[in-house]
Length: 292
Image (cartoon, rainbow, N blue to C red; front, side):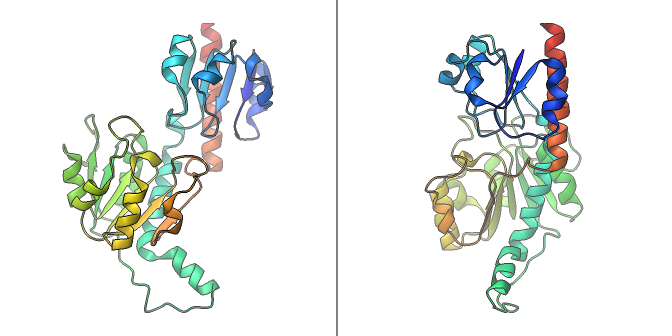
């Protein structure tokens, strides 16, 4: 069995996988690979799948599977798995860090000091204490974020298409109701036909003036130009994102927008999480080899 590591994983992973077969990171050997391990960079499209006749298993180190053509993979008899359980803490901690950074002007404060400015009077802080957090998507990551927000005595609202079984989260049936009530909105939604472009000029208009939005879900859940217009008008007090239309983003209007915190898709890139991803990959391969 040939295992292709098509993206970056923890350096210890190749050695852990040698018991299953030959391990390579040479992408030119994709046509020979039986197993392909990816993160967000590699796109397992229909064309990729058709060019890999021996492929039988794709494992995505992370949560989202929108970079895999799952329909075509299934038609070709290829199993597709992710490692959703691994990334919850890492992404939730980043979302919480962004929520703290926006109202405390951490980036602007640091950059102004480096530039020789003293903006003690200009940088006005607000607190998370007793504010309302709306979580869009209350799966593993959303629930981990709720645990952290509860420590700040925030009121926590949640929207999901399934029942939210969490005592910290008050489930809201209508996402627009959540958008109207929240001081902070944290996006943890997958990209689907229903969620694509969900945050647009119309939904932004329903939000509180001065709302702050954090996105560690998927970039295409928001219409970037509408977010920029809301930032420029002051409707949104801050927008922080770790996710983009493409990695890296191309011609995004957010690069010139005010009151933003922009990160290069590092939500799952903690040392601890990469080790957890490796653990799950080993478990998945053990299960696969036992069945085949």
